[in-house]
Image (tube, rainbow, N blue to C red; front, side, top):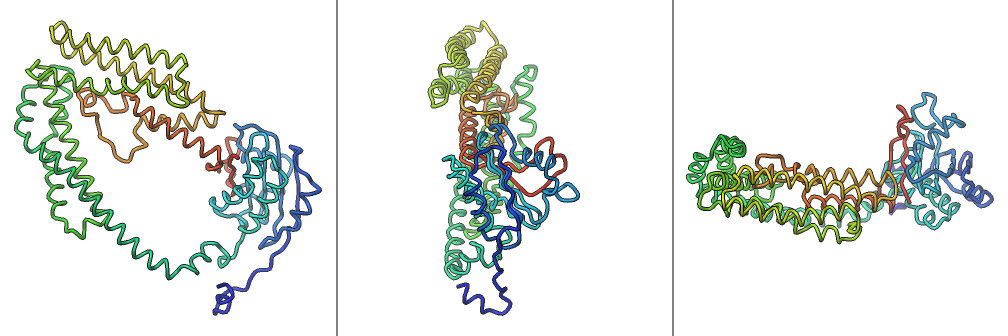
Length: 475
């Protein structure tokens, strides 16, 4: 393929490979075999004349290798840095290794820089050898891969070679893929429309009843007043949902396969589902706060999210890395036992009118708030037990917080379909499901970082405005 391409007009001549201009080894960690390393590096061919530096030091897992390399350069090797102090010097490639903290990094001048993906490829070439403590061999493998990628002619890139061989096949596959995507999108649009239609039909059927329920909710009630605030926009939102319903049902079969119409169908389904949940909350508020004939059913629906959390606690604590034998786990088990007794007591007291519905909801709110606090405490225990260093702990903590804030989900209800969920924001209650979601994501992120899947690109607090091309990762 390359031989044929080289005959084409304008195809560039192959660049002559050259050995490094210089090889500088700063093995402060004392782990490299210089007699093996130096001749091996001097024999590697680069696409352009390049100065090669190898730097090692003994750090810790919490260290930022990028920051350490820059600190070392500023202290003793200013020639590694550009004249303006903001980048790495032109023509330079640095391979850095921390055998104790288990980090590997690659840094280069602006005229030698490669993409983050290619920097990862350089580090990946060394990673398996470094994991086996083959420091010299790993360094050689990393520098050799760097020589292949730095200033690589476009016609030698993997992307070009694959494209050159598969252009015709790709065109055919692309057409087939387009048809498949359209079919999948069309199917997804139909499902969203069906979801929206079911909720919209429920809301429309109960529209008159919803208005009657809202008209008798006691506005003087702390909870009733908040639900009525939601109801004040109900009809406007119903009109918007009606407009969306008309738009999606006017779509042709072919247009359902378009991504923008899938988004429209989802907007319709979400709007109708939210209204369907809200009219249930309005009905429950009327029944419970006025002690109507269906107040017990309404009360059970308010308890349902809390009951679900209590039921899921043991599975959470017994999972791998769940720290089920910890003090925070014992606190959760004790809380569950007490809460089950409280639920029974609230229900009996409501039935015998010893407490008001507002007081029962207050008790439920206080219990769910207490559970959120206990789960947060246990999250700290789980993070401490799983994370091996501060960096991993911070990564897990970030994922747990993101789950609690709902940031791990593209779409979610704006409120839990209950009276408390309507009065308070959804992130008020740290649920067992949210805990599990955050923990799973946190473990996945840490595992990826441990296997080298996560790259660090910044130079830490001491780096200032330095923005040289480079990154590091764990092995």
